[in-house]
Length: 288
Image (cartoon, rainbow, N blue to C red; front, side, top):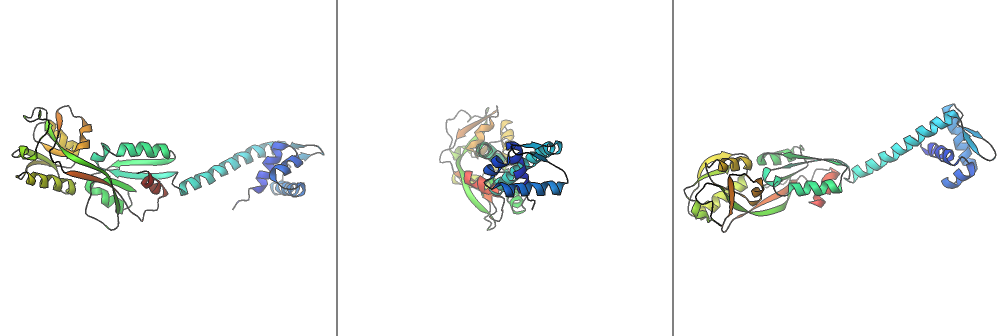
């Protein structure tokens, strides 16, 4: 490792222009200081200082070396600070995958709070189809994911971060659009728009189970990947949908959202691999 002690001694002497004051600031006696600086000059092969009984004067080489040495020490201090920040998760890179639903609920708040607390961390947010998130976690492509619950995997840890009810999404022109609240039985016979089973199995299962509790099997006309596509089709009046309440924030002009009586609750979870040693992940988990 580079010994920067002589550089610190020289910079201190250059700033004080006096061996006694420099030695006092460095908490050592003058003879060791003088020997260190003489050795530094010998190693460089140039004279840095001109000595006199009362003061020290820098040579042209000394003035140049002082500027460079001071900049080098500042860079070294910054490097040490950066390394410590990275080790404690206060700097570095963190990649979070999320579903579209969480973009309308917890993701904006997490991004804002984490960015404010750890501005030196390069936070990357990646919207991913729900069924791909667990695979990307296990492959190490992302550090954490906000998603619907999936089949438990012992390789992943999860924590519930949001529980919300389903609501009904209807075209503004739908006959039931003016209802203040709807019961699931009132949607019997309606064409439904649902997410594909492989995309969001827990969400789809909850919707199907609730329809059956109302005494009917839903007439599934369209199966899509994204909740935004679900709402786009509802906007066109081709079907109705049960969606997480946070999707109200999508605010499509032709879609109205109505509360659902006895609405089932759905969860979104934060998932990560305990084997992930990214220090920034630990900071994110603390915040979340």
